[in-house]
Image (cartoon, rainbow, N blue to C red; front, side, top):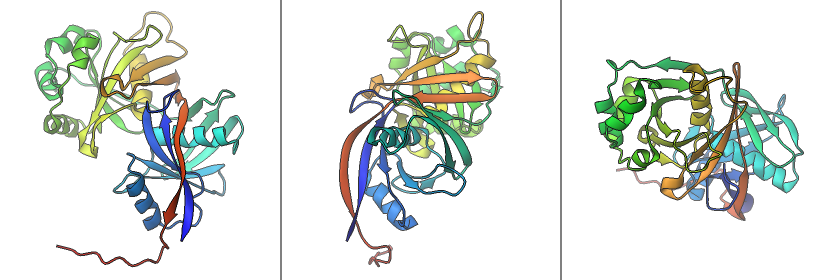
Length: 305
């Protein structure tokens, strides 16, 4: 029976057991779809990235949750490239990554920070008569007054750089920390606005170096609360520029903190320049071992009810 080296890597973190964990299989050549799916289920992370060779790109990644393949995963990409750089398998510089949604630009800095390109952004404001503070507050388990306080200056909007997120401003960190989300209500709100989840944020951050503190809820795709969310961070960076959230020039770089309320603290660096949106972060390998993999043609006795 063959073995495959398999890692657990914490993305958007600079220390172990923080940020957002992903599985990484650095050499997935020859694995069948079924084998990759079963490995992802065994690893148990929200996503596992499988590294494959590619004609026309430097690398190819495929991403599997414990239940199915997904086309793209930001934190698993950061995790995979962070692990490759840590191993010495790649050098700092620009890379081209092939995914199921096309080719993406990835840059690895000399210090190991991984930057991932996003799709061109789109931001659509949601008017109060389409979605009021009472309904949002009930869905998030936050006093609606905490949403109304900032709603006049910072609108609710659907923002996307590949995955659409409903972006919701909250006045203070204390109110955001009190969130007690109603999963069914969040699913209904998101379905009504074609969003994958809600990203609620406040400029009242824990770290003075942070731009904001965010929390992401996406129960419709099986994520009650995501520790640190790369795709949402890129979308929110584009949203902040679109709504004129800052006086004067837009910052060259933003820093979003997330995950502290579920004991997985991490942060995402975000750069927005025209249609070029990039998210960046560190990655830390926490587990490195060999996984035994049954042969691809193995027949299982599966009993169907």
